[in-house]
Image (cartoon, rainbow over all chains, first blue to last red; front, side):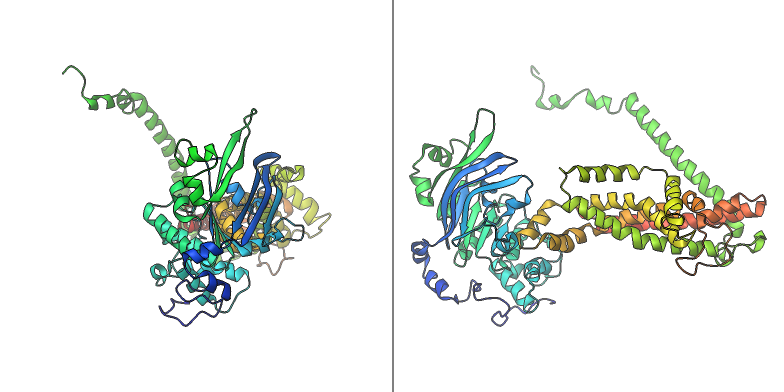
Length: 302
Length: 297
């Protein structure tokens, strides 16, 4: 485990669903999808998530309500909106992270691959193994770089091929070349941008089908942000991404679909977020159908 | 020179206030307080070391108590202390960490019984040690436990005494692990227990270890509850097991000081130095641990 050779044989420890982004895709679906950007966009009508009248309340007080949208496979779906509109709350419904907040209740429907995510028989732990998440502030574990990436696979019970899995995940997160000689060093010795890519690698090590990103660049400098955005473009070939961002330019740069949420202040000062518009990113930014969306994307409020 | 230069706006009365007489007076008062505290400590140390100096040698550690002060030592008391502390470590630390994990990670604070437990633990930390001695005597040495005045009784009693300290320190250490670490682990599909065992607890270990050492150093200096339990003041043998009679250093010191002969007082001073060295070493280890492994999140 003391540093891998730079060039290794094809990985063995992982399933075919995680091709190295530099090598040829292995499964048939990926091969079709890899036909170029246009082909992928045209193909992106396969629904991964269906949200129907989704809402979240904290101790009975609604934070978001009435969100209905479909997120598509191999697409990047951006969720934008002013502070307090419930973007993060919404994205935490996709992997049942809201379960962990005392008093939080989710109503409405979230279907993942056609299955009700909040069904009685669904184990949230299994959900989170399939749907990875990257948080606003880089949050590596206080362990070595290697152990950070290996945590997920180890939790899943993987023992053999761990080295390969770690290398592959770090390569997919475009971090391998920077850390291959110091896999044993503390994750906190990395820069902020590297730490965030480490967190992405850590999520990728589980071979998730979906990656949720909750303002992944808000704590990073512009160069690191570009790194992460490039990475998202590459990752889109293999999985679906849902990104929350307060940066409209970022949403415009990276996403194919954009959901715009806004916040409504009721008479009793309760603030509830709701979905205003959901469409192709291009439409949302150039020809929004709602006046509030237009005001927001042109910078007149928020 | 019609308008003041821009830099003149930075001039204010605060500048003189920070160097004025009130400021100096306050500093001087604080310095005096510090000096009083330090001087008392140094005076005590010097006094005890000079008094005990003639008997500060290996004989003190290797001889058993004797009615002739010249031949007396504290070996059985030192071994008794080790035995009792062993029982405290084995019983108190696992229970304390377990309780801390429950309270921090599982307990629903909206439930009345969890709040009751929390308040009680805070209160227990403030209960005088003699009360624990009465408890140990009533329920462990006699009555319900019926263990007699043994190493086990003493260990369990001291364990109860410092349990609140271990729980409170462990809770603080666990609470200091940021929520983002737990979230990262759970988001990777780890169960709550896997998250605690592989992330939260390892990250909290330095804090828990520091708190536990400080708790042990509290226990090691206790004499009152053990006297009540029936610790012997004259033991010429080392403990042979958990059911053995015993003495400990503070009890031995108490015994020697209460003797009329001057030579026993010298012996007591020497034993105090030994106890102080052990305590300082333990506290030093705690400080070292904290500085070495503490992480700024």
